[in-house]
Structures are given as C-alpha cells and as structure tokens.
Length: 151
Image 1 (spheres, rainbow, N blue to C red):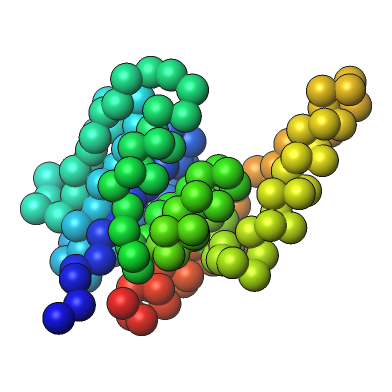
Image 2: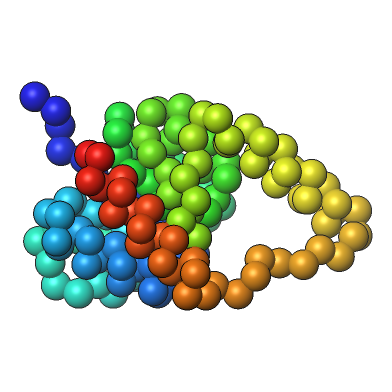
C-alpha cells in the first residue's frame, strides 16, 4: 500500500497567493499540508492544513522540513539548498514560480546560486527576482495540480 503523500511548505518566504493556492488544493485533494515557518502562519480552517512554528534561526525551518519529508512528498520552496536536500530523500520540489526541481536540474541551479552569491559577496550588484505575477501564479497552480494528479 502506498503511503499518503504530504505537502511541506517553506512558508517563511511563501507568497500569499501561493499559500492560498496550496490551501485550496489541499482541501480539494484531501492532502495533508504543513506550512513550516519561524513565525505564526494564519491559515483558513481545514482538516488538511496546519502550521508548524519553529524557533528563529538560520535554516531551522529548512532543517525541520528535511527531517519530516519522506519519499514522494511534495516540498514547496524556492530555497535551492533545501530543494537539494529533499530531492536526496526522493521528495518532489516545486518552486513558488511553478518550476519543478529534480535530480536532473538541481546541481546546475546550485552552481548558479553559488556563483551569484560569490558575485554579490565581491560587491557586484545583481538584480533580484522579477516581481511575482499572474504567469507565475498560473505556472505554480498548474504544476501543483499535475504533481497531485500523479500522486
């Protein structure tokens, strides 16, 4: 018998619109979903969503997600090192912008992240991510729906 999957959300940086999409999907698909953050996360009442507040600190929420997630669970994050760790545990990863991260693309994303971090540390000004828009919202919702349908 296949275990029920869970969704873990790296909620510290999760856009509100993504949180809303996840809550609706959790209720519709009856998938237990845990929002992990170092601050209180307000969620609509549901038997399928909960929040887990962890102590403040560097990577505390990330470490809790790594500890909790299991094979085939879904992790929603845009944190590349966190994605790498949960992919090693054979979990699935969706970024807030709807991109699927997996064994085929995570190492190149880590390299790019590390390169940009080195550039910023040396004083080079880099632009941040583009503003979150309708296209990102749709891409996220579509990717989450596809991933839940496969599960």
